[in-house]
Image 1 (tube, rainbow, N blue to C red):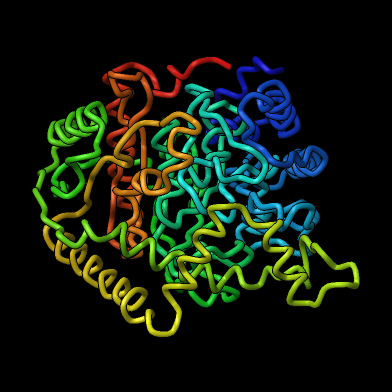
Image 2: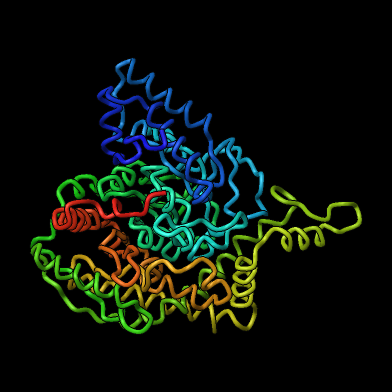
Length: 499
């Protein structure tokens, strides 16, 4: 079963074969569970496998088909869920010891929508603790390896989801993107990741890191598969006060009819220069030439505020994290340390946080608390929010000239596990190209655009669209993906080293 051809099928192909009766949902689920059992000890993509729950969901899909009921476009397709979404009866740890063993009593809205669409949830994936990181090395449960080279990072914070896709343990996955944590893992693993418009996918039941930036989104191996998943999870949710009450853009239709003919595509001069790997820039420049060949007009853009995005982000995100993580006090749920009758409630809270939070989470809490403190609020947090406005204005001016913007997704390919562990600033630079989009709330996608010649590792092409124009991502992404397949004769991921 570990070598079953089922695991190489796309999500769209699996759904079609289940609907036609060529495959059963149970067969598909068992094939992926067998693959997980065979390779995840090396990869460590998953924190929890819900074998019984997944098989029960699969049997329900098969029963529906046998009764002649119409199946949805992803019915019976397995999925790896980032361990940041609450799942009733299944552990949700957010990669942290402070929630080790916590079993939520309710489903996140996104989880509910997956279940309602008959998507089979295989389990919960590894991540940087509370989604704070760019490498999945900050997980309290150990790092995840990149299937292209297990000594390298799979990106972060959603490295478990991207690694599950790249190692064929699941055809679909869910990630969250606060500063690039869907797109950056997609780039370094040769997969597709989409950050929808802020507010397009409900955050209800998603453990909060930075509430004005966090956004759940689809991860897949093809643009069409990502679009199919996008339509399942997106849409207004009255349980989320930041949810957009607007129709979901026709992303599947766009993915099925990809074209860039006549489109204006922007290239921002701030997204290159010092710190960018030569092979990444080479593949990006080739992608721009490909877009020209496909009929796009390339427009050079100058967005000066983008140079300030990293600094603004690392004041805004820690400030919001400082507020959000205050709820983890050891008194209501999760870990509790020091409750032996000799310590006050305040001491129990302090001891619990000391034992439960990892170094990066503590670092960001302290940075955020300082930035919000009396006398420093205006100088730090207030100033960062003003820069955020400037970045949004730069995007608005840019989208008056172009339909979409393209850039490298990450400045480099996957770096070695441990290489940047003692250098937080070097780690933060991994999100250089992705952060501006989160600050502005726009939609963005990363898809593979080749291998860097110096290390033979995947490079990602980022496509950015205006808010609520997510369909443009899929229209451009599908056209680029089809051109790559036609040019080289196979999907990029087929080159990934075998596990």
